[in-house]
Image (tube, rainbow, N blue to C red; front, side, top):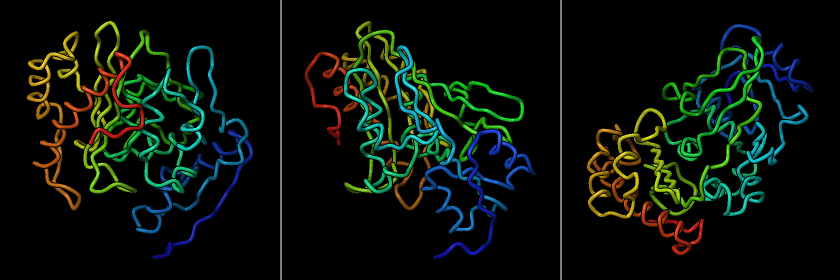
Length: 295
């Protein structure tokens, strides 16, 4: 199916020019980066903007670099760039997550910033950025501001991005202690598919645990009660059982063409158990290499 409506196309060379183009009525213009979500929505008639503002001509938005002890992911950085840039020592879950996003061709175009701006419940980067406690840097008519990932998702396809604003990048701070982790994604088959359920787990040497869930509610979320149950006890079978029992209180999966609510809820427990085992064994210096799927 082709795109059935017309729109203006702009390719600004500066942020100021882009912001001016976005300054009209809300929704009249849309930002285009990788376009892997946006083009599909245009084709399906989900949205019909008057203009697209292609930001790929703006210098500096493609930077992927260490800034001090933090990692900076510019708005135009693709998933494959992250895979090529990162090793398994500092932010291992980023590369593990990026490797199971869609297909190689999609990963060459799709951006991490675009993924969280699309804000679909199953977005793969959401849980990982939540456990890494990332911040989103945006600029708009009111100037620049920084949004914690914990405050980013406001609902299905809704974010904290205000009208006229553009994401310039994502900053990921260092984890205070050495950690092991796991990103686990339930799919119908090996290959390009959206998550039926997903989770990211981070376990530190000091015993703290971070857990975030995806595709089992309107938005990716941190699971605070599960984190509390597992703190200092991530390898304790009783604590793991307690954490699994808390999953219905931390998630609200739906039934759709990809899975039933009941299946998602059951498999979320499997993901949590296997993800914890992988994260703890990686913390101990053993376990499956990052990139090895636990299902």
